[in-house]
Length: 437
Image (cartoon, rainbow, N blue to C red):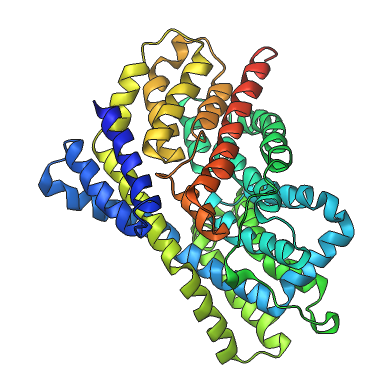
């Protein structure tokens, strides 16, 4: 009965947005209340679930999305995006630009949380799209596939790092195995799959559409790359530094503060004000006007993502994940497939890759010693399952849909299928590795 209610709520959400033409945030709010009531959450606690889902999601994403939009808009308006695109095109040519963006996404995705990487790198995708008149989904999906894989497979991302601890696996070995599994998954889900999506119509957000600027007025190559990628560089540096030198308690405290994504984004934006704003002859008022336009463009996206967070929280508070886990726990199948399958089912019903991964770990960690399975591979198997079939209850689905301005049908056809390919390729890679390690 629980699964039926979840499926009916998801169907209601789709109908309200597509057939009913309802604002997605309002649709999420209505469906979340209906789901909470149907799944047995006491009436006096429904508002608590709504507020927690809204607060947790906005608390972790609002600053990042807003500052990322400001930085992206300034990168575009200053001509830095045009300069970066020109350099990439000269280096790789239009034929291989997908691969250039995919590699960029993979390198940036290792230190960056998914949502941070998405907001930072999407303007680069759109710059290529607008400047060279290329299909947006075809060009952008490989980079986003790389970001997604690093989020689900590789430490130091939250879910794989937590899974390593729960299964007593090795962080270094898991990272090594994860790289082996990740590369073919990204190639298949990225450039190969994207080649089938050239005809999907997409008009990305106008805020990232660059206005052609004469070459002699563009920022320098080093300035353009360094300022645009400064958040990536700072986050990578603060992640790697503790492994290189011992900083002590005070040093670690400072590193934790300055390594926080919000602080990094703010520092990068302040730097960009000088390097891409004032240094390019723009007044502070002009720069602030650019920032204001960027915020207007992403305000609705923030609310829609928050709505997805509300629905996810309702599913978590109702105990749906535990009930689903109980149903499949006794199935007699290969342990790695079992971990992948439990994570997949929870992911499809709940929407959160992190919740799916950690819930699955909570079920299997107590019995991992009895399963005779490599714990490093179990981490990767669950990570692959936690990425499967992202759809309307996942914030990432809505980020992709709204930024690329797609219909729900085309978002499922591109984004959801890409995530499914990543999950399946991940499982195949893990099972092949299991034969040799």
